[in-house]
Length: 94
Image 1 (cartoon, rainbow, N blue to C red):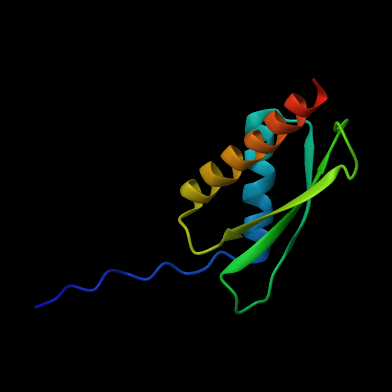
Image 2: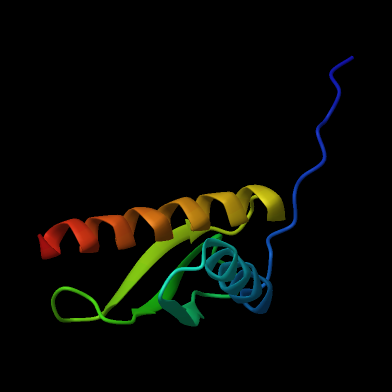
């Protein structure tokens, strides 16, 4: 008999926005999560982020994520990608 794994329900857009804001606060980064875009039936969403004092315009970027991940894993992924973007921006200044 084959066991079925439970299917993870997609996080809604408000939950993804909350997780992204929490990840940004945890990293103490000079950024603000301003929104999350995606269709109600899509697992893929875009997170829109403003960067304070960026090296070059535009001071805004988006990152795509899949919202069918467990909350802790999504927070880790978003935090890592936010750090990566800010680190690259700082390196571009030198």
